Picture 1 (cartoon, rainbow, N blue to C red):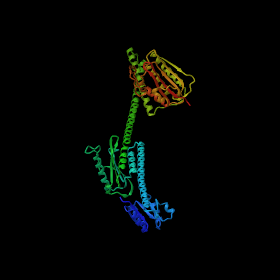
Picture 2: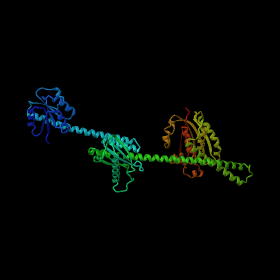
Picture 3: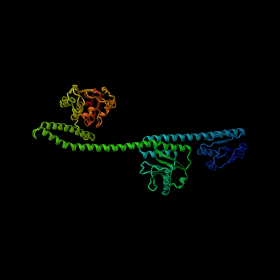
Picture 4: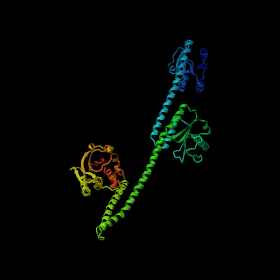
Length: 555
């Protein structure tokens, strides 16, 4: 291919000499600077040789270099050196140079120009690649920061706009399968007629994806919801948009179909454009799956919360309804047993005493149900005040020592003297300790001992039980530790964490025999949490259990 050389000037001798030197090149001469500038916009030459002796050359060269930065200009000089002209020239030739030197100089300039052009395009492509890499990275980061499906699709489209500068994108989204949405991001406004054509094209593309198979969702062009986002509404697209170059991709939600996107541009897409487009369409897949799982979890939690409330309300209502007739039955049995209704035969008294014990047991179950529902509903009243934990232990021990004796058990206390006060509700802490001691009495065979202890301990010195290590490591400062230790049946290591679950019953023969609601320990745990305290357990099958709770010292 011939090199194109443009001579700017009016010296026919120089023009003729150039044509003789560059016989194999296409040499054209011009003296009208405006015409040359117009020519450069249409068909730029490989190099311009400007005559330094021509009056318009200096102004011409300045204009050329300001308007066309990458254009090569070589100035012919006549022996004098013009420093200002030198600033805008890529090469210098004087007329006393031989033809060979002139030819070599121009050849070097042409090679330099080619090298600069190659470098320019390489840098341009590199800059474009780096910019797209940044767009992909930024888009990926934004994907990771959202669990909103609609926002994720918007982020994908914004990434495509930044990386590809599209004219129009048509994104079909099944975020809500019952109400699919066609999102149009357009450079210009879209007429109703063009919109109808775009909707039909989108539905056809959608059906084509499944190649004659049953489509996941039915689409109707008349009822398809459309969201239009137009950048420049003052201009309007027409049907020539369909002559633009276009690319198409499916959008998946993990392994499931979610939608599709088609993009139009008024210039041809490159291979890099296609790679970037497909990458963005794939990038959104995993975040969409995460968003779907998150929404599923949210919906499930809402259902669970609703069911939990229904259950709590049911327990509360039933418990209240049971308590009233049960109180009446208990009072009636007490009156009959007292002999006020007449003398009782021994067998009758025996059966009534059995009824009284079971009435008391049923009352305890109802009270547990009411307590747990009150705590969970935040309706349990607390009266916090400074108190001595040993006085609470003394009250509970006094009330249960005879119960322990009836089972041939010894109930003892080892309480440290001079313990600091805590801020708590004495009635609720008595309830906690009563539950723990009552459990110990239930699950300890006769002839054994149950020991209650109290002591002051810093959180750093508390033995970090492996099964409760995470909770224990959160404690800091001084605590009062109260423990109830028995010599009962013990609890298997894998069952210990379940001991504080609602309605949990540890499976063994004795637990089935003594029965219960399984609410004593959960109630104790929640009451202690209201005191900013913590409860845990240490146990070994056949060797007994120790339940310990910690209460922060009053500051």
